Image 1: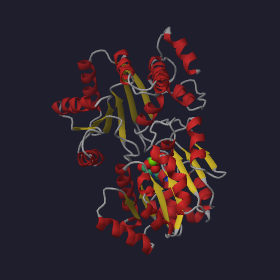
Image 2: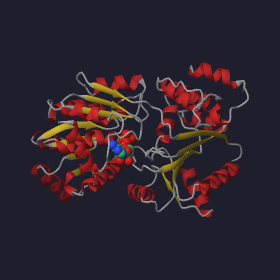
Image 3: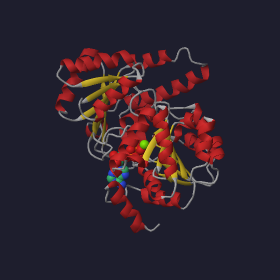
Image 4: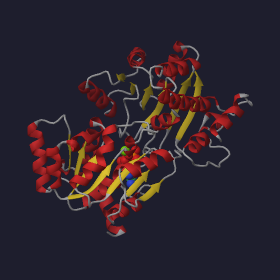
Length: 422
Ligand code: ADP
Ligand code: MG
């Protein structure tokens, strides 16, 4: 397919004028029938790398996605682009028998170009047989880091994907996509998905439009006051507050409401209906703020989230990067503020007390890196990028607290530099 017609499809199907970053090269690799591995930060535009090829290819693409909430979000988006409801479907445990039959009919008719499935859907024998008889274009494995124990969201079912893809159709290409760039996770993905001589596309992990700041968290009340003041300043702009535990999400949401800020709490303890409702309230901007545990956010496509506040220190730099990465996906402003206290570090450590020793060791290592990041006087961007194996050579990024207001030489700094090797 020529570049001109790819651009034309981009325009016609998605209404975009140009490809973002290396999207075009990725799409060409997949359309050439090659296994393709895409490592691109959150907001980089990974979905389009399989959605556009799916639309212009013969047959249907099977897209494996880890979360049911994620699938619905994606399918709604695709449908809104194309204005054809049957262009994309999902199959998972939330559908009724009748709905499943309708999806099957659309698949058999050839109208459907994208089918989103959970890994569990693929393990069912009847589905395997049904899919084997369909004309398929390719497999896309989104959030592919879920296959690795070294990623931030391991899902054991992902380990069986290769076996199931082989059963369904061993001859079509696979595209794997992730925003996790650590070398261990990368090699796990290639190995476990059995990618054959994949073409690998790695993008820079710098997010130049994100502003990073660490604030000391001294008293809880004062911190909440500061947060309220901050959000009032961000009038009309959407944001996420991440907290460590479920109770705090409710507490904070109540406090915000009491201060005239529309907010909802979100955590895995709520039933799925309530979670979906609250997610929609946030996506549709009926509320300004969602106060959530890490249960919220993976793959949520809201391009104009303007701030991400961490009320507690995240459990790894990787988590921090992914969570802050949800801000400013449209390339515009995104403020990321982390409230840091030693007490929260102890809380995190305490949470691991019952885990097996090896897990505790990995956990402690990840926490100590995050602490070093929080206490550092070095450019935040430089530290984050070096964590992903990239070098940031600018002297001053101009978009983090340490570059804007350099600290006096603090004695912790040298240790930090050593710990993080930056
Ligand atoms: P990722 O999965 O890499 O985190 P998404 O696929 O969700 O990112 O895309 C992030 C945002 O970028 C979305 O709002 C999407 O519509 C937008 N986007 C993707 N490709 C383009 C493009 N070529 N031009 C403009 N916007 C794009
Ligand atoms: Mg994505």
